[in-house]
Length: 498
Image (cartoon, rainbow, N blue to C red; front, side):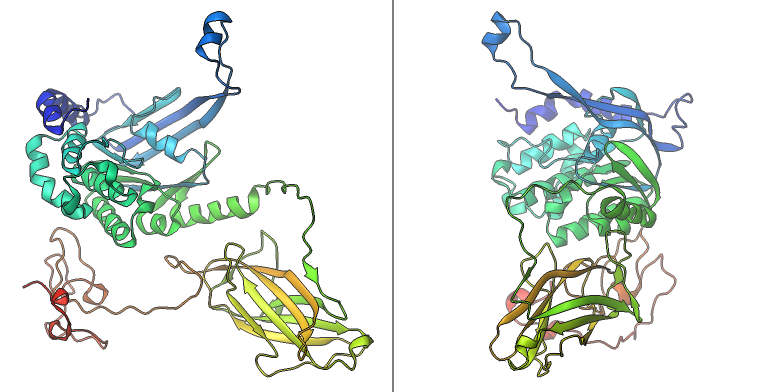
């Protein structure tokens, strides 16, 4: 039967004190420069056993003395790493590269099969959804139980309880079992507890991805505040924007090995090359029937297609450099025709631009839709069409489909799917399809900011006055942007607090 949080707290005060003393005790002089380093990993190897066949049942074990056969899988292979106190370290890599296993070793959840892991300082972890929660206990009881496991005394949890509930946004659900929580509520409550332990080292895995945008922003802000206060943060994430925003240093994991350790911008570039260019692509899956990429009667057809940037062809292929978002390019299409359509009327040429990961076209147009028609060229001649496009799209891979059809009847002469491809890169912290290029203006002179942390300037959301800021604007600061005043707000729910 599950113990209540009160029983756990009452029965384990000595254990909590021992845990506190173990984390807070000064390092001995003989360790790996422990007084200067928060984390020291030396030659870490972590192995798992994977069954190669169905495990035998109890009868087979007893009568045939048969045991299951296993293959050894090395999840981490000789990883060595040092992290300084106050450093924010990002960990990126493809699925199965060993990122989460590394964090579990740092947290002490998995013992090292070979090598050493040394962590100096109190640790708070958020590694798995609902880790440390008992599904039959309420949110309130789990706060106290989880806090006790992290080494907090009851009075410390009492003092932080309201702040934990507000940060997690689950105050109305604290007295129901957490098995009824959504995944986002699980993560918010777990993260709120972890950050209110006031750890010296915070280990965070990808679980923050299930939170909404507002919670992710608050979580990143809290981790930034940790870094500014000299705390150590290790963040595993596939969100490269969050990694770039929070971490100055990032490591890249690949098949259990640490393959890059350096500045975050260089690490992200290395990871992008690793994913798109360095490793050979997997062999194509066999298909019963080849899907044609070109259809139509071919009486008029696309003879060639090129993408030009400043008059020069843009390279294609996985190693080709991406195009910057917003740049203007020219798509040049060469059309040839047979004499059989000489009397059939004009042609309409269309382009469709799509992303392989989406069902909807990013953009499509036809010359006929725009009041432009093409007379069929004579046999042996070539008609050239140039589409000048502004690539107001965000980062991703794009394919160009081409169409040549009869403008009057719609009869298809040539439909070429995937006629050309290109890649686009865009500024950090932009996701989606279209580049809307927002320009953000903020008027918030009476905002609050923690007094111990440097505040941004007023035009970036900071307060009018702050004790640590020297560029305090005058009280008459008036930015040239639209804003709503309290008297402009409509409805009782829109009124600001008194």
